[in-house]
Amino acid sequence: MAIQVVSAEFHKTATRPDEWPRGPVPEVAFVGRSNVGKSSMLNALTRRKGLARVSATPGRTRALQFFDVSFRPTPAARPRPLRLCDLPGYGYAKVSKAERDRWAAMIEDYLRERDVLRAVVLIVDARHPPTEGDEDAAAFLQSAGRRLVVAATKMDKLPKARRAAALQAVERSLGLGRGEAVPFSAIEGTGSDALWARLAALAAEEAPAAPDRDAS
Ligand SMILES: Nc1nc2c(ncn2[C@@H]2O[C@H](COP(=O)(O)OP(=O)(O)OP(=O)(O)O)[C@@H](O)[C@H]2O)c(=O)[nH]1
Ligand SMILES: [Mg+2]
Image (cartoon, rainbow, N blue to C red; front, top):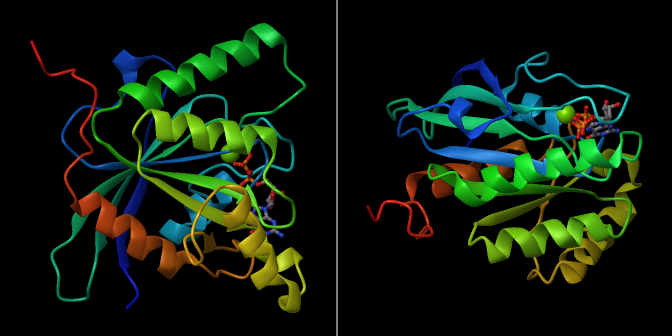
C-alpha cells in the first residue's frame, strides 16, 4: 500500500554539528556519488518536484540539507514525522583537495555521530558497477553500524530487458542478497513505494545501538 506524504518542507542547511536540527525526530540520510540522483530521489519520494535542488552540474549540494516530512504509513494511520538529510556527493573532482577533505569530514562526522539517524540510503547508478567510492561508502556505513538501504537509480536509462540483471550486478558487487537493492527511477516515478516501505519500517524501529555517546 502506498504511503501518503502529508507534508514536506525544507528545514535547514548545516555544515557544523551544532547546526544539526535538534529533537527526537527519526532521520534518514541519502548518500551517493556526485550527480547520481540523490536530490531527485528525495523529490520523488516526497512528491515535491522542487524541494531539493536538482542540477545538471555535479557538486551542487555542498552542505547537509535537512527536510521535514510528515507521512501516513496507511490511510487510517496518524501522520508520523521523519526528517530527511540530503548529503553532498562524493567523488566530485572539480574542487580542491582541501575542500573535498572538508566535505568528507563533514559527511563522516554526521554519519558516525548523528544519534537520530535510523537508516542511510546509499544510491548507486543502476547502469554501472558500483564505483570505488560506492564500495568505500558501504564499508564505512557498515563499520559505523548504520542500517543501509541500497537504491539503484536511473533505471529508466536501461532497456527493460536489462534491468533485473543490472540490479543483481549491484547486489552482488556490494555483497547484498537477492532482492535487497531497491530499483528506482526519478524520471519514471518508480521505486518510491518500495523505498518508502523500507524507510517507514526502519524509522519505526529503535535507533541502532550507537557508540557510547550518552554515557555521561
Ligand atoms: N534519467 C534519469 N536521470 C536522473 C534520475 N535521477 C536524477 N537524474 C538526473 O541526474 C542529474 C543529477 O541529479 P541530482 O538529483 O541533482 O543528483 P545529486 O546526486 O543530488 O547531485 P549532487 O547534489 O550534485 O551530488 C540531473 O540531471 C537529474 O535530472 C533518474 O532516475 N533518471
Ligand atoms: Mg544533490
